[in-house]
Length: 523
Image (tube, rainbow, N blue to C red):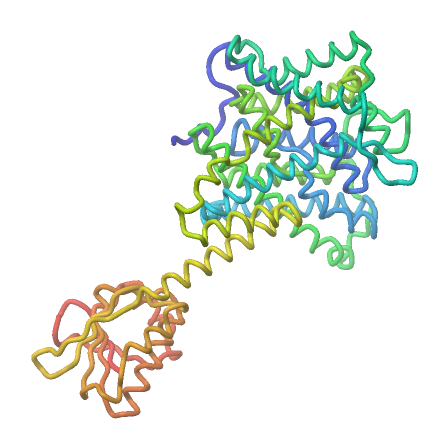
């Protein structure tokens, strides 16, 4: 992989400009129903979601650290907003999004984006697979109609067959067209072709306008609107308000950064380039802060739309900028045309995204990798589907860390021999940390050892304070029997830990009488 330049609108050449612009148009078409749906999830007006998608997409594309990645209003953040909107109203939501953006900017300034590297590969696999399942399940709602009793009813008969046929036609065009030409993105060609077919044959199938009407309960619902306007949240600017929005802001900031940075990693792998995580934190933060000041619901990176963009040839910042500007143009001028697009075409595009997102190689891992890794993949995918992406990733990291600690707790051992001065030497091997502290203490027998015992750390490392405490407790056991414990070849990191511990451990420093190359510590 190589680092991307700090700012490059697109790669040189007309072909790159064409690919980015057409890919941006494709993404914008897919963004419309998503932004509207997430707005309803959060309990706000459709325009709040559309404006959020425009502002997040434009600002993240310009300021962020990952060209080609698409940002907008997302479901992961929308579900966090529901309770705040219901209990306190939309104005408090705008304030919470503004504060979340400031937290994200601070995370970027403090260079906290690097911690995404701590996410293990099985967690990444679970995240990708879980998200693919979530995207798939989200499309199933388009195969349902509102029921008379409030319960949705599945399509049946001719309506179902038309829907399935159009979805399959869309997927077929996306799959086979690149074999004939790559002049235009296959997804865009599929959407245009299916839309013209539906209009030309006057097929009775749901359109974007029909979905809007079903969601809002208003047959005349439309995505038409104006520009987002500056709007300082109309709330009391006091400590009481801060107590209300602070928990939501922290969660929104965390969820947004986790989803954005994981999506950045995925796009890095697909494009074999490397984005800048800390700059992406700042880009996401600026986008959310502007949303809070211009009446948007905020958002983060969108893995589905990002994959559509990459698969359609969008690689530069221009693709994200184009997607945002096209979306705004739809709202300002082209609502009547966009609302005629059959929802089946957009569902077909998202099904292709699902197929491309899911790591089918995961099934080949069965029996070839440790069972604990398989468990983490399934766990993260399951929690992503039934709960929340951020929670799933955090739990996956914690479980992976515990599994790692458990495995390495068994890797500490010692070989024992007598030196020429009658002292017993324990040559320690492996890491000494909280997980292996108990096994470490069981390696020694103060009752049976001679008056002088040496622990040689040349092939071992003390990694945390639990390891120091284990050494201190062992020293006390030898002290109680009037015996001397000497520590040799402590690593510089271990000596630094002991120095920081100070009076917390009773181990003193003396010159090493045997090796003359490192300090001994006597107890």
